[in-house]
Structures are given as C-alpha cells and as structure tokens.
Image 1 (cartoon, rainbow, N blue to C red):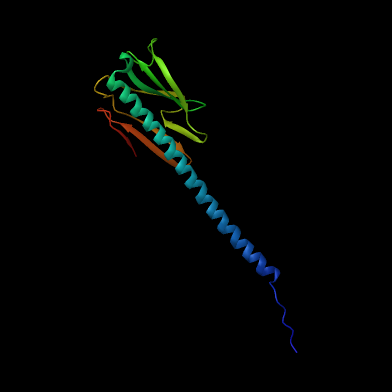
Image 2 (image 1 turned 180 degrees about the vertical axis):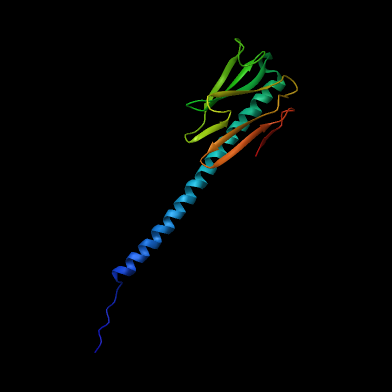
Length: 154
C-alpha cells in the first residue's frame, strides 16, 4: 500500500516565492519609471501654461509692460512670472508669482547655478528663441519657444 501525501514541498514554495519576488521587482521598476514620466509631464504642462499666460499678458499689454519668466537652477529649482519695462534686472520689475518644481524634478537647462529669462514683447508676443529642459530620473523634456512665440515640447 502506497501512501500519497498532499501539499507542497519546501523547495516548491521557495521557487514560487522567488519567482514572485523577481516579477514584483520588475513591476516596481516599471511603476517608478512610469510615475516619473507622469510627474515630468505634469510639471511641463504647468510651465507651458505659465509661458502662454505670460505671453498673453504681453500681447494685451497688461500693466503697460513686457511679461516673462525667469528660470533659476539653484538648490531649489524654480521660476518667477514677472512684468518689466525692459528686462529681469530692471529695478522696476514686478514678480507675479514664484513657482517651484516638484521634488525630484530639476532644470538641466539653464545649467546648475544659472538663470534664463524668456521675455515676451508687447503686442506681438514674440521673443528671442529659447528653450528650457526639465529632468526627472531618466526622463527629459525640452520646452522650446520660437522667435514668434510658439511654445512646443519635445
């Protein structure tokens, strides 16, 4: 008479646990990368909106000034929306708002400890062609502004 035992051996359980651990690790890696992609897309959309808002204010001549954004790549990456009669260094500039990039998202252009200004001309909304690069993990997005004021994302 043979005796059959039901159940799993310790080796079978360890193999299944090992396979599940590997699959979970791979899935977590994809999730983190996906999450960074969503975060950078959200940050880029906010910056693009603010650029278009500054351009719109310049085109209607709000306050009688030019409008622009001053990008700062420092310990805390941020940008300021401002109005000015000439440029950012003008003593009569008015800062409308200061916006910080979310944690883990940084500017790669402007370079570290540098700044960059995008200032839109009154009425035409044109500017000097420029770009700003934002990085989150291995994801990079570049926001470009053409000389006629078109804003695009690559």
